[in-house]
Amino acid sequence: MRLNNLRAEEGSRPDRVRLGRGIGSTLGKTSGKGHKGQKARAGGYHKVGFEGGQMPLQRRLPKVGFNSPMKPFSAEVRLSDVARLEGEVTIAALKDAGLVASNAKRVKIINTGVIAKALTVKGVAVTAGAKAAIEQAGGKVEA
Image 1 (cartoon, rainbow, N blue to C red):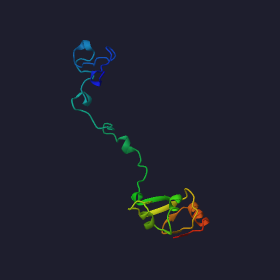
Image 2 (cartoon, rainbow, N blue to C red):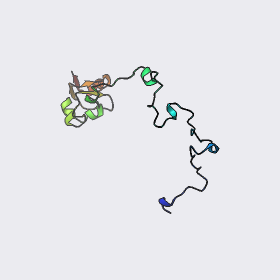
Image 3 (cartoon, rainbow, N blue to C red):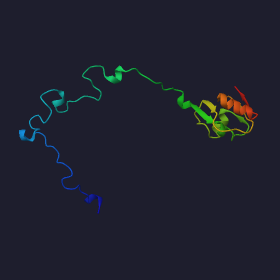
Image 4 (spheres, rainbow, N blue to C red):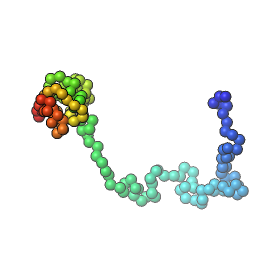
C-alpha cells in the first residue's frame, strides 16, 4: 500500500454541491446568494470585523495593557546563579559570566535558590528576600 494509492471508501464522502445548475438542484439561479446586495456580487465582500460603517468592535473597546520600551533591556538573575560568581557582583560581571544578555541595562537579583558564600553586590537591584539572604550569608548589598 502506498500513500498515493489511498482512496476514501465509496460513498463515505458526499459529492460537492454544484451551484447554479437549475431549479431542480435547489441551488440554481442565484446559487444561494439571495437577490442583489454586496454579498451577491462577485468579489464583493468586506474586511474581517467590518460592521457596515458602524464603528467596529475592536475600535469601540478601550485599549488595555502596556508594552514597556525598557523590557528588552531589563533582566532578572536568580540568587542561585549569582552564588556561582566570585568576588564583586556587578552588571559587567553578570554579563561576562553569561547570566545576563549583553544589551541589558538594568538587572535585578531575585530570591530563588540559596546562597552560602559572602558576596558584595554593587549597582544591581535586589529584591527584599534576596537582600536578606545575601546579608545572612555574610555578604553586603551596595546601591
